[in-house]
Length: 82
Image (tube, rainbow, N blue to C red; front, side):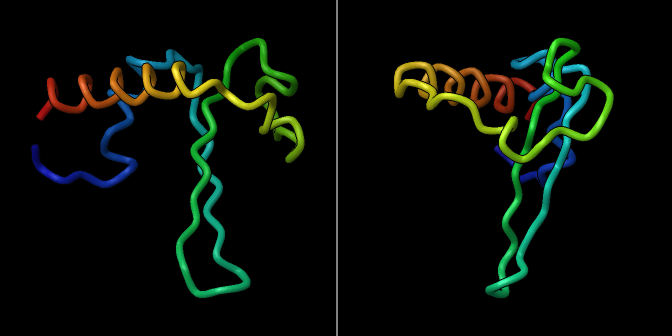
């Protein structure tokens, strides 16, 4: 599979998660590094169409089984578009 940058695989993330849009928060203030949060936005999120409060981005922890299912779905989508 060819390496791709994070904006390039929008179609795969959209296919797996079906958001109305995706926000990217890129930070690196304290230590020189690139730290990015990828936040899918949905029509029913707490601030649909507007800025979302920092605390609202992080809900309850996602169970490991569900994280593994998401990772497998993303991997499959990326490999099928390679």
